[in-house]
Image (tube, helix red, strand yellow):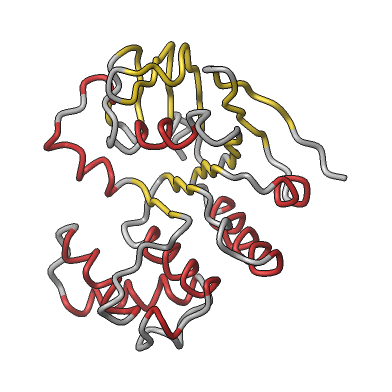
Length: 228
């Protein structure tokens, strides 16, 4: 199994338009690593994630994610970069006008899948992984917040990503449901997928300790959280 880094950032400056958000960012994440990304609102967490998935250009420094060089990333390459990763958002971002299965089918078609049986099999596989095997026919509004986030994680797994980027995935969930989502994410990590998760939820970090990156004062620092 390859030990090449999934994310490797060196001496990078992260910009939002022309505004410098983070400077001198150095970061390495390997297969199976689970890292938290913490920091106050406006500290640069989301800007860093957006740079990693190609929504913000890397103007200064070196960066490689899933084999793509961020500092030399062409616009036409961005969809191919995103097929190598799964992105999970706080607000689920499911299409409200179609069922769970059709939400996943939409993504598969958009990422080049053609074979109907293979698509059906893949949808069943990822829903099974997240404990939603019997809910494919339901509409998003018929699901709880935790169920919607499980579907969002299933969607992130469709193209067998090397990396999951999760931006506050438990932010809209109650504590019990948040724990269920964390157990699911840790299981995904154990299958050699790298996970970088932005969060404000320190109780989650204490209960599920992993190395933690902190955005503060325009820099990214590495800390180690100890469980209680």
